[in-house]
Image (tube, rainbow, N blue to C red; front, top):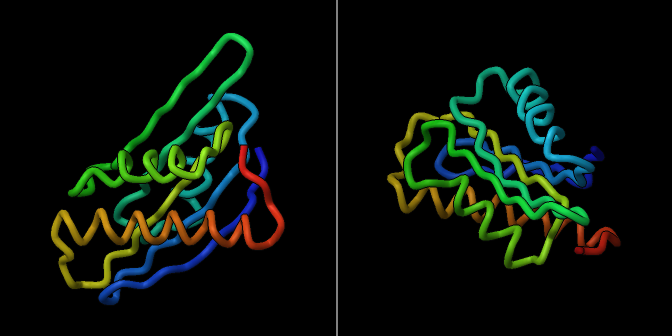
Length: 128
């Protein structure tokens, strides 16, 4: 696995830390989640999405870690829209005291995940 980009995004005092990784296997996703739980201990939720393809496997996974609004599914949609295969997108949220509601949560995760991908692409990365 290789980290490609990382950004911080804030919405109503909540902080969202989005990271994009290039993955070599489906097992990398579990390791990335372990890393994020250690890195952002104060985060209430660590949501992720991944897409992996090899000669004999096509797999997409996501997890919302109990967060409202199904942000894991939203992050998977962001990977699909950007045609990123063999990538994992993780967003950790540190709650800022203001509830965003399901739509607001989904929007914040989408925007933070998209920003991590944009940062990667603008810095010379390629999708695929």
